[in-house]
Image (tube, rainbow, N blue to C red; front, side, top):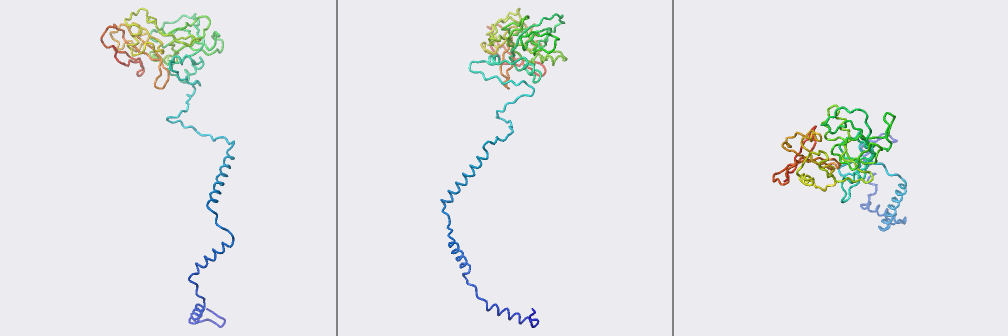
Length: 372
């Protein structure tokens, strides 16, 4: 260190520091406590006192209510935010098939109302039937409302293939959208639907050859017998509308089939119609039955060509056939066919009935319960 009179030696510096330390006052042991006390007294002099807990709680409630009121005022009049729906198991999201007609499902049948009654009470139009055929082809049973008409055919008909029941051959039977008789080759006309009327078609009303008649036709596309068509006509056969019944449009009710010889007048069954239906495990009074008749096995090829020579039917002379409408597993109404061999009612042996069910590319026989 350098002073006014020159550099200080180390001994002089040490002596000066020691003298300064000896002259300094000694700090009080309770200095920290004294400082805290002085600060405390100073805060009371300002007049500020701590708030009671009740006052703080009331203030908190006021703040919360104010925030809620502000949020409600902000949200009033604001449209709800759009959200995406993710259909999952258990959801009730309606599904519309692309290209299919926007038809609402038929309402649930009330107690005592059959599925057939519900179908006939809510028919679709000819245009909707055509759209369904062209966009979502399946064998759903449909009731179609329109005007039945048989056009006069002056063109000679070629040879008819007997064993192709699902193919329209030389027939001009149709269901029109309007009552106006179509003029062929004269520009666009109202929608029409060609009808494949079968020997077993139940006719509550006849289709006229004069003026079109209002009616409802019950039937389906994609008949299981389409597989019996020639390969080049398979797609055409699938799109044919096979008629199960014609119904009076003003009545919309189907009478129970009773004419057992309507299809084959030469058949002489031993069972009555009620006995035959009961033998198949069905109820004779089932309102969904649209056909019940007996045919000789020689005629079976005209109705069900794929099973006409099935080994299960070997030895049978007369076959009973029943067609009825029921819901399948996916709840679609479909037509079912069941057969059983005719026999002596007093026979004690077992008799098997069979469901005609598509197996692979062709219909087959699925055995049911044996009956006595």
